[in-house]
Amino acid sequence: MPELPEVEYASRVLRRAVVGRRIVRVRVMHRSLEARLPPSAQRRMEGRTVRAVERRGKYQLLHLDDGSVLLAHFRMTGDWSIGRVRESDAPYARAVLELDDGTRVTLADSRALATLTLVDDVSAALPVLGPEPDDASFTPQTLAALLSRRRGAIKPVLLDQRVVAGLGNIYAAEALWTARISPRVTAHSLGPARLARLVRAIHQVLRRAPAARYSAARSGSRWNVYDREGLPCRRCGHGVRRIVQAGRSTFYCPFCQKR
Ligand SMILES: [Zn+2]
Image: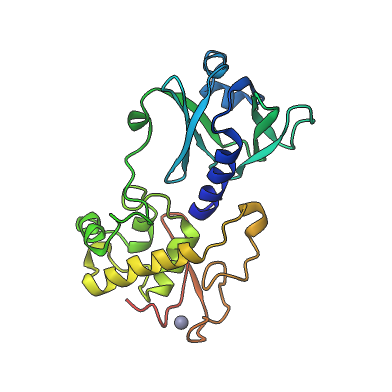
């Protein structure tokens, strides 16, 4: 599943390919995707120029010149493949935008769970999203307010997009390890010092993240705790433990992330 830095990278690749270009033709090759982007929406997009590409959480927003917005979400395995119209379709091509300069933007997705939706009102279409982790509004104070009523464990709460937009499973675990906070601690019990460490850690792990395609970036060796069950903690040498919280794996060091 692409994490925030990888969606940011993908949106930059998309922006370079599409902004200022006119959409000549839209093709959708997968039935479940066609249910979300029916032929009427595809026809409506043809002839429109892409004004801007924006990222919000893990959503990518293509603003078209008639005010409509194409919302893209990669889910598990989606990605953009940029090529030329005359080339044969990319592997796992699910939808294609053909542009007036001969560029072809393909949504490639082996699991076919990625979504494309054309909307007129973005705020109504998007779920409520918390601050972006790199936004100035994401501070220990705003995080304290967002967590004040949350009685669940901090790790699953950090995956809630209403708390912070787009922080995924890997970076939530890495940030908690960096901040020396147990993933099992009750969210609203975090005091100012630990919240400050947590915000700093979230900034740090996202800043260090490679800006690359996620399909190429997953070496595994660069994580401190993620996917390292049984391996020594890089800080104290104790074995990294894996637990399941809200259906997702959490990796942490029980020694330096005490409750
Ligand atoms: Zn440790």
